[in-house]
Amino acid sequence: MRKDITVAAAPRETRGKNAANRTRMAGQIPAVLYGAGGNSVAVSVSPKDLNKILHLSSGHNTIFDLDVTSVEKSPVMIIDWLYHPVTSRLLHVDLKRIDLTKKLRVMVPVHTTGEPHGVKIQGGAFEVINREIEIEVLPDDIPEAFTVDVAGMHVNQALRAGEVPLTGSMKLLSPADMVLAHVVSLKAETTEAAAADGAKAEPEVVKKGKKEDDKAAAPAADKGKKK
Image 1 (cartoon, rainbow, N blue to C red):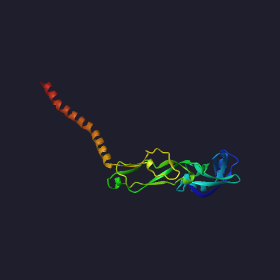
Image 2 (image 1 turned 180 degrees about the horizontal axis):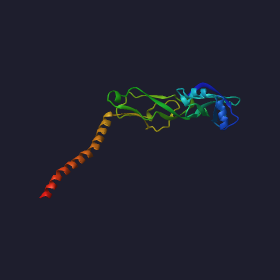
Image 3 (image 1 turned 90 degrees about the vertical axis):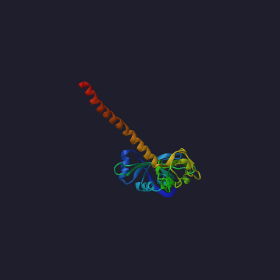
Image 4 (image 1 turned 30 degrees about the vertical axis):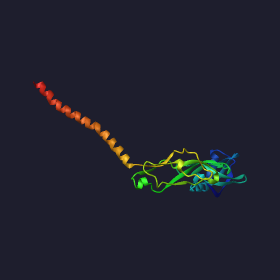
């Protein structure tokens, strides 16, 4: 989704670990700008500005303008990013130029709303299997998320990727039969668990019977020896 946001950046003349550390000490982070037929450009940007974008509801699917001082101003997306494993500080990002006339492949979250009939009336359980789908879409048509009403789902019914309503330039890339969520029967799970417990208990009964037979046979054997 495109947002009316502009982030300032400055070109970096040097690369490497030491140069990157100096950039971070100055309150910026190193980044690389590439794509859309343009040259790769090393830049420095504010981590605060990019963290704000990553925490938007549209997240890394947000398209915004990057204004590189004396170089260019382009619509971009955050393609990859790295956080410090201990401090969780943003350390580096990859930014891709976006051609607004060409479709992109993006992963979009799928949210559900409503309480399934299979849960409310039939006593089943609602389980989410996959939380996003991949689509191909023009940049200006990228949705923040899809929302699907699952109130009509019964026990043993599933919501599949092909059932998510797409509009405009959107085209589904995920398998249409990929399960996103389903309603399962708790009764079936209880029956299976009971059957499994019964199967585990059976050898113990057989084993006990053998011991009793052995005890009954022992006195008879001893009596035979006395004669």
